[in-house]
Image (cartoon, rainbow, N blue to C red; front, side, top):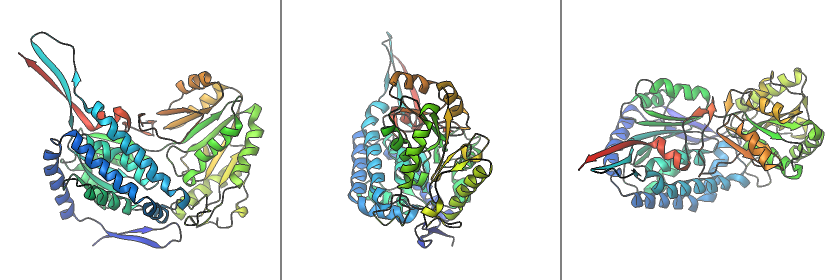
Amino acid sequence: MAIQQTISPVDGSVYVERELADPARVEAALERAVAAQRAWRETPLGERARRCSAMVDAIVARRDTLAEELTWQMGRPIAAGGGEIDGFEERARGMIGLAEGALAPVALPDKPGFTRYITREPLGVSFIVAPWNFPFMTAVNAIVPALMAGNTVILKHSAQTPLCAERLQEAFDAAGLPAGVFQHLHLSHAATEALIRDPRIDHVSFTGSVGGGAMVERNAAGRFIATGLELGGKDPAYVRADADLDAAVPGVMDGAFFNSGQSCCGIERIYVHREIFDDFVERAVAWVRQLRLGNPTDPATTLGPVVRPAAADFVRGQVEEAVAAGARAWIDPGDFPLSRPGSAYLAPQLLTGVDHAMRVMREESFGPVVGIMPVDSDDEAVTLMNDSDFGLTAAVFTRDIAAGEAIARRLEAGTVFTNRCDYLDPELAWTGVKQSGRGCSLSRLGYETLTRPKSFHLKH
């Protein structure tokens, strides 16, 4: 019997232990999913919406309990935990509301003697592999639209956040969802790969690392099934000379340090016009110094640990290399006593004197560190922002909205912002370019990846 352990970054204790699904249990889940999908696809859309909405109600009703569980599983400060449930609700209800229009048949112009239209057919069984960093919000991006489109779902959640899968199962069960329509499995890496290869899986949604995305593509190769891959980023922000620093500094800094920097669309690189560079850095350093690194169960904590000690040490290595190469570290780790090598608690860091030869400006850090570079023009900023293997989001801060939009059009990213960052609007397509992945979730367009077109050409 294989056991999966969840080590809490709060204190290093074993917070959850779960038995991994054996082949017999996986096979039973697949059989149930296939059988349940035959009836679920014929279920009226209004009924699907009612069941999914009741699931959301059940999750929201447990908001405080789920926030506490999130803190212990992945280290987010308890004061911010409820925001995850708020975001989950916004995305879920948004996608439920968009379903009728997005899934409606496509009507064509009249053609004498013929009836012609296109329907959107469900794919079948959707296998969703969800990450730990925003475990409810990332999972719901795929789960709710998959179900609304008439698919059944098997969810494999991160070993760091297994309770999230169980709480979703409980909520769907409380909502009266028919058996087999939504299921979760705790799986090993090998079992996950085997499930992707199974011919009864018709769609895979994966959120995680570039290496994980490559794993999905390898195992899905030759089956010609739909895959959605959201693989993270090294997202940039550009602060123009005309930016409102009273708004830009807290906006960019929160985008960089919220969730201890563990956001695939968090800000990891900042470019500031030279005219305001010193002012920006001074304000940014002051903002970072007011963070309180501590036990995330304490409501006064504003910066929790990263997910595990190895992740913290990876970021420490990036920072040490950058400093050795000439960067300046503005934050004294000694001001954050809990931060020490080998610990998941990591002092925030802000670097200047950086360049794109340094790992901290190229590799995804996924931690509380950000590098800041001066630029002399919009053109230089655009060149540097696009100089990356990733392209998930990018942000421009400026009072000149037309100029900001013009710059945004030149940026190689799936989502571009002006005067905000690190946010998913469920009515906008969530997608990336380059190594940030491919496919699309959220918005009306997200339903296109979870359905296939079927054309009706009826001669009278």
